[in-house]
Length: 478
Ligand code: GLN
Image (cartoon, rainbow, N blue to C red):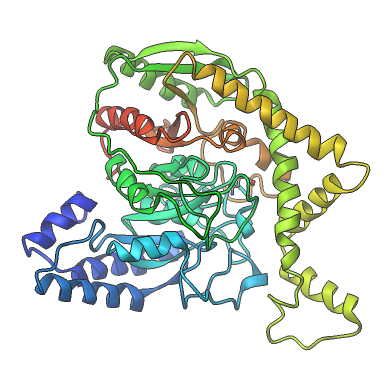
């Protein structure tokens, strides 16, 4: 059952009474106990919750009630997304004892649709990072090579799907945190259009960039989870009305695919370059029309991103003053300032402190115009680059990462080396566009390689169509 398991096969199996929802839950929970000591994808395993949801579903099936969209689909949730009654740490000591008082809207939607929540996944602290090594609770390991990182910041969610500990999962992507770990772990991941998915109940990193999105082993499963979570939510004023147009078309015939020359620049690993180029040539044989394009402001994207990201992070993280969160069990000591310093100093890791300082600096009087306002202007130019490109093409294709999954410890001491990994992913967040990461095979050493398809706003279905064509070429990930 395990190898070819999908949302569709679970549904068919339940309909034909081949297995129960509780059996599905147990298969995945036992996979979690088997793999966790090597992978460490989870911070909390919610065995009881998964089994009680499964029992309720089995009772509904016995009552001949219609099966919901995601009936008995095991789903893992990044630990910055609230699940009522379950610890929610965002990978930080600051929130070690915080228990979510409510469900995030995406979680409520998954529960309503019959998904089984198997656990909360490891992540870089407050989603700051590209390797999951910034977690306060130890790194997650790449299921394909446990000496290497799974990517980040949603490394736990990608690794859980890659290790078959969960069928699907949710992550968040502020500057690549879904696409990078998807490509490092050989799974599919979608960063939706800004506003397509509610952020209510997501612990914020940078609110103008953050989006929640799904991981799965197949394009079809990724699409089904996206369909289940997208759409307007009164609790998030930036979310919009969005009926997902389910895309049945699989052919890329006549699809105009733009290849930005800036995305194949110096520094791109040769094996990644050749897998992506070979895949594009195959799509061309199937009738896609490839066209070289230019996104001329790409070279400014990374610095623009890190100014906006740190500025917004410094504002968002001001609430963790150590009094409202993080102070549990600690006696106030000295005066108010001493108390602040002791709780904040211990509660945050070094990357979080670095970003709060950088962002506070960029927003301070005298520097605001030179850094923050300048970054906003370049952000507008980056968006214009994409808009002009989409006058000529339907979709843009390129690599996700310039490098293969690296070894644990290799980059974590050098923040700049870590930031450089984001070079091809951050422009998409700055422009608010959707992008789908799809596996395109492995390197000579067997490490997964991914590529991304960037679509115009609210055109996720076009990216999925190209993704399906790629999946047919490379076979599904199982
Ligand atoms: N690696 C990027 C960063 O550290 C992306 C993070 C994310 O998307 N959450 O900011």
